[in-house]
Image (spheres, helix red, strand yellow):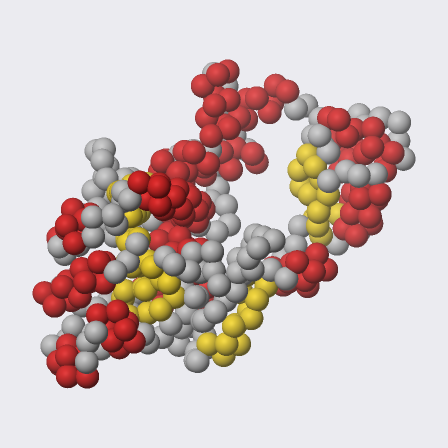
Length: 379
C-alpha cells in the first residue's frame, strides 16, 4: 500500500525534468500512466543502451505503466481526454503551447475534469518574454547564476562550470512534486483543482537563494564575501596521498581540527593542505572523525556503491527488466515509519500497458483496440 495509492497520474513527460517528478509520485504509490508516441520518447535511446534501453529511461520511469498514443490523431486526443477524466493529476513538460495545439491544454482538460491538478513544466514558465523559448536544464542553471557561482568558487576570473548531473532538471522536478502534493491537499479540503506552472529558471533562482539574498543585502557577490571574510580556508576539498577528502571545519571547530593535527594553531590553509597531503584518505577521515570534525572521502560512483553506510541504508535497489536484465539503481531516498517505498515494476517497454489501460479504465474491447492499431493510434 502506497501513500498515494488512491491517486492516478497521466504523464506526458519526457527526458529528465518531468519524468523525475512523476517517478517520485510513482515511488510514493501513485498509479502513473506514461504516454509515449508510437516511436517512443527520446530518453529511451540515450547511449549507452543496455538491452536496447537507456539507463536514463530505466531510472526515471520505474514504477510506471507505459502506453502508446498518437496524440496527433483525433482518436488519440479523444482517448487522452477520456483518460484525463479518470486521473487526479496531469503532468507535461512540452514547450509551452504544444499541449494547447494538441487540444490537451489546461482549459481543454478542465472541461472534462474540472478538479484536475494540471502541472505544466517548462524552461521559463507560461508567462514572460521568454516563455516560448525551448529549454534544457543548462538554460535555467546558466541564467540563475548557478554555473557562474560554481566557477567562481575556483576562480572568479575563470570560466563558469557546470556541476555534475542536470540540476536544472532535477531540482525543478522536486519543486514540481512539492507543488503537486500541496495542490492535492488543497483539493482534498476544497474540491478545487488548479494549474501549476513550474519554470526551470524560477526554481534554479530559488536554489541560488542564499547567494542572491547575500547580494541583495550586502551588495557583494559570493566570491567577494569569501575574499573578505574567509582568509583561512578549513572548509573544502583537500588532496591526500591516495585521493581527495572534503573537510567541513567551520570556525567553531578550529580547536578540534588543531587537536587532530597535533598543533596549537593553524596559521594558513597551506599548513592544512600539507597535513592532509602526508596522509591517506582513510587516515585523514579517521583522525577527524575522532575529534568530531565533519569529513568525507570524495568517492567515485563505484566506491560509493561499496561504502558501508550506503549498504547499511539500503538506498541501492535491484529490479529485473525484460531486456536489460538485473538493474541496480537508487531507490526512494527517504525513510518513513509508516511507509516503505518499493520499486514495484521496472520501466515499461514501449506500449507495454496500452491494452491493459484501455480495457480496465476505458472499457475497450478486442475489436476497438484492433481498429485503433490499424489506424495508427496505438502500436
